[in-house]
Length: 133
Ligand code: SF4
Image (cartoon, rainbow, N blue to C red; front, side, top):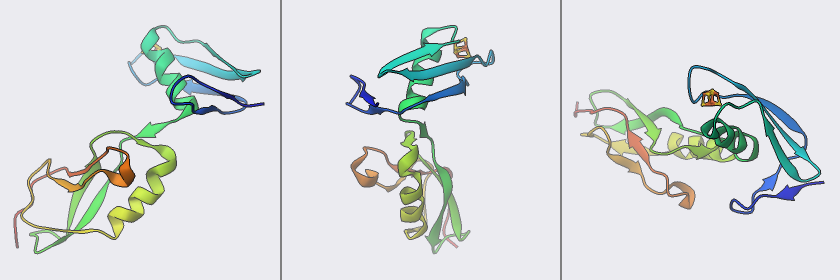
């Protein structure tokens, strides 16, 4: 049986997960379980860890880092990253979009190279400056 959270009506996945909290060096192992539609969270030592484990269980996100092709650049590729964490289930299509996108030098660190990816309010930005060839 699945259930919904109040947060954006996301489905709570079935089963359980033991999640290592990476918010601080203590590294608590947090157990998150869907028990008859209710989310049970144990093993955390603080509220931040509880929230981290909850998000990791329901809708994990990651900062995406990769490279993008550059036209007329001193180098053929530039390192890029998302300016916010991307839902894990959208990472692959975002990587494909970046792979088929070509930007043009000169580029300044922080320049938005792809705006509002898939309407997620997340931008792909340059991780460094890149001068022209
Ligand atoms: S639960 Fe709290 S104390 Fe434990 S690792 Fe996470 S942030 Fe640190």
